[in-house]
Length: 234
Image: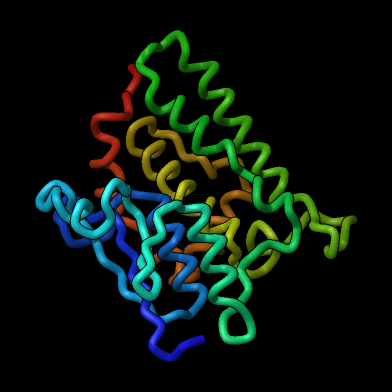
């Protein structure tokens, strides 16, 4: 790998125009680069105060995007795949999962959460909440089920989705779960981990890692972002 490697990540800024904004996709790539231990520059972009910046740097693109040695890369999934290939062992750690099931664990949680939190019709709330809780329970079951390399006679004691190390799967899921947790508590007085011990432990394990905690937007930023999206049912 060349010594003059230059990586720039452009992400959404917060409402103040400087801090990290509410964007799980931005946090996903931020976490990956941090876990890779690669030297990179993080740029928070305020499109409200400087609407032309995207046109000037990445025409027809949306945040987040990456510039790698001068090459613009704009697709989140393709950026993840590219970084895993370009920043490879032995110099950089491998972040891909060991088990393919870990990639899709919790994949529908954010979708069900969005339908639930945006609903303004009281008659639909019960069913949407049920579907949301089902998605959380499916994730809970996956976290508690031993992986093939674990002792199958006891609940899993692993720290994260695919084992005891953060992987690409966690970089995708944890930012979304953080948003879910903050928004549900504020707008619906609903704590998602109250009865879900596996999920609660998973989030607590993540909170011990700077790669997750230091890439999270402030809770106030998430609450503000959902101010005109979430509904509070009475």
